Length: 534
Ligand SMILES: Cc1cc2nc3c(=O)[nH]c(=O)nc-3n(C[C@H](O)[C@H](O)[C@H](O)COP(=O)(O)OP(=O)(O)OC[C@H]3O[C@@H](n4cnc5c(N)ncnc54)[C@H](O)[C@@H]3O)c2cc1C
Ligand SMILES: *[C@@H]1O[C@H](CO)[C@@H](O)[C@H](O)[C@H]1NC(C)=O
Ligand SMILES: *[C@@H]1O[C@H](CO)[C@@H](O)[C@H](O)[C@H]1NC(C)=O
Ligand SMILES: *[C@@H]1O[C@H](CO)[C@@H](O)[C@H](O)[C@H]1NC(C)=O
Ligand SMILES: *[C@@H]1O[C@H](CO)[C@@H](O)[C@H](O)[C@H]1NC(C)=O
Ligand SMILES: *[C@@H]1O[C@H](CO)[C@@H](O)[C@H](O)[C@H]1NC(C)=O
Ligand SMILES: *[C@@H]1O[C@H](CO)[C@@H](O)[C@H](O)[C@H]1NC(C)=O
Image 1 (cartoon, rainbow, N blue to C red):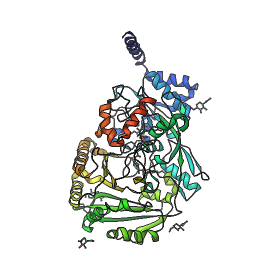
Image 2: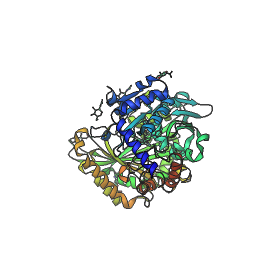
Image 3: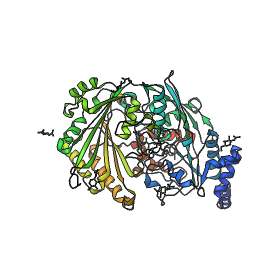
Image 4: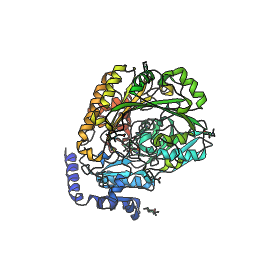
């Protein structure tokens, strides 16, 4: 009893002393620890002129940059791993929380906002730690977490037209968060998730040590490849296995409205997309559009998109045989390098240089806006009338800037065992669904209207999607699935189990075991971090 009281008293008196100048204490600790007073130049505090622009710099969801959001005590922008080590040390010492940010694309802003937590927090923004070193001979690359996937794709493309990496589609996404949560894109049916192709990593653990695959051990190495960012430590860099692609790939798109029988197409595709050869990636993006110039009549359109690792001449007969309803023709398709296709995928037009991949502030429909998103996995084709019911939701006022994306699964995803990595969404899924609703700054006072539209859509879909658990993709973070109790040292294990099973199925238990072993004090913590065992 006595030692416990003493600790309480000590920490209370420390807090009294520190509460006057926590920022100064932090800065002081950092310069001492790194034995370099100019490290303070890498720290932005609330008084710094550029604090707000640095904080906003990579934030993608403006819901979390409005003045009502809690802001960090400081933002640290390390130039060297030792600066990250010193920050971890000082935050622990002073009882501050850390949030690690790589690309800032977290759907719920968890890399730069802490809404539920009473303790001040510090953002470690890794944007300056973003080197990419490609070895064409070995078909590998070391990439630092602060790089974007566009920077990775660009560096690979500069050296080889036939090497690629199976990560996501938006090129501004950060490597750090993306690989931590799995990562899928245009070639995942052939090569698996981004995290499936990580062969080594450098991680800073809670004690500030830098560990590689060998020194961290296979359990922790397993956990950081899909268990979600922000739970186990700070990954500084990843060693990737690059994959082979043809010098040209084929990219096709076909857009149909309801009047052009879009529903029939989508309905058919549900039983086709996952069965196609691994070399074919297909998706549908479904949204409402004006059908008259004055906007008085609207319809729903379904945009089919595909990427094929081969030529148009090989693809067309394959599609005619498997998906004749689509009526795909040569004119719907273009050939280009895989990296050029990555540019096209975010620009929707050709003619942009490869350097577009290096633009970290590029705006795309799903980035740099106010949005709410959710995900689902579909294991049985949805009946046509039920699809029509979903389209009806798109006619509601709140859905004027909503998009629902269906992406075919199958291929190698059916062959990788569920326990191979924390990402459990493997065999048995026909496709995944991403729902996004966007709104403008002037409408943000009514954000609840859009949030509730999203919940209605999600409820509507319940009978048609995966059940027990209703699976969800951790990289499409959704705090409405439940959150940790941030003010409880241990997190809220019972609550976490609910979203934990959705994101990880039974892999959640192994993640909790790893977490309990490597970070028993639950230092690396956020609203949906893996809890320690109760
Ligand atoms: C426009 C857009 C397009 C997208 N497209 C795709 C897609 O095609 N495919 C796909 O799979 N996903 C996609 N996503 C989702 C994306 O993969 C996730 O949001 C991913 O987590 C973002 O990584 P980040 O580094 O940018 O995010 P951040 O917000 O920086 O980080 C996300 C989480 O990881 C933690 N974290 C960040 N860096 C590290 C690190 N170095 N070590 C440990 N933890 C860390 C953060 O604390 C946070 O909890 C997209 C998202 C957006 C906004
Ligand atoms: C101190 O940190 C600065 C970055 O702020 C760096 O440029 C400099 O090289 C460091 N000096 C030493 C001795 O490490
Ligand atoms: C950061 O974003 C918020 C909300 O979008 C805005 O009010 C603020 O002016 C931005 N700050 C800077 C420096 O851009
Ligand atoms: C849509 O389907 C109907 C019934 O199968 C058919 O008669 C009609 O021609 C199709 N419309 C278009 C635009 O393909
Ligand atoms: C559709 O019409 C509405 C109403 O006129 C208009 O505000 C909107 O910008 C139009 N949308 C597009 C994509 O043209
Ligand atoms: C790739 O396709 C483009 C466009 O059809 C063509 O100009 C180019 O020669 C092709 N390159 C290779 C290496 O096949
Ligand atoms: C990057 O993209 C943004 C937004 O699309 C654009 O305004 C900016 O000019 C681009 N920057 C460069 C260097 O091309």
